[in-house]
Image (cartoon, rainbow, N blue to C red; front, side, top):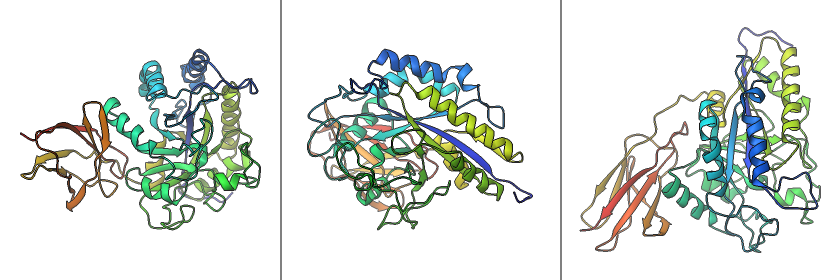
Length: 395
């Protein structure tokens, strides 16, 4: 190893795709009851487990929880939790205090429904469904939540999804590039590369800005895509060489972001995590001058990129004379517009807004005598946001 005056740091992100129990008699290794999910998460989030493998600062394990809302399907063959907020409420009701104390992050995981509507089939066509809008509308208006980090369900991303993400979310942890057999046949009979293609994406343990024409190539878009690979699955199994690559970057004086993911539905979760953490510690001993630090996805992204944290944008709502509403931000936002939605009684819809100046947007005209709730939220470049509500009354 070459000796450098200044070494980089390896930031370690352990991402959890929280999808809940699945009833599949052909797969006894899969958790089928919420009670078993709760027991498993209690085990990996308790102080004893978190502290079993400390990082270079003697700090305990940090998780990044990418929470799934699985809705928009016609059938549910494996009895997945297909209700709005089902997974979100389970995790925050049972573990919110634990997550906050340990600096865990809460983010968004999304599976795009296929046109068939079958509850175990995901689509690569971003226009096959707009269920993601319904989910975000409800998370914003009913749970006061808007994510800054995203993970694509089934690893599936395309240019259309990439363009949409560019409007709102600064950090994307969907890239699973690596020495993968992209021609392996999936359960639907298709080759993996036909379902989820990251075969040409960067394998460097650092984020990249995607290209507008091809999300796998480097370009000039603002969003950062980070590599996040399978801990242990039929698609890929993390190797020690993957970890070494992250430490080699740090040895050259560059910060790296080593990110892996697992699911909350596997009984083997603890075993898989321990195997990874043991490999991580073994590699670390070979690079004595290099620190590795556990971090949530957002903080790791900021440290790796070198971005400073900024306070969440605050909005001012100004009623115009023509039954419109002007929305003004006190600081720059990440995308070209804030995410705005309208709630009228039980009906929630996304509200398009037009930019009319620096950090200023205008809504469409509202109907006379309308009394509605307007919600606005936007990430800034560091991923901070705050949902704000305004009661609009045309009188």
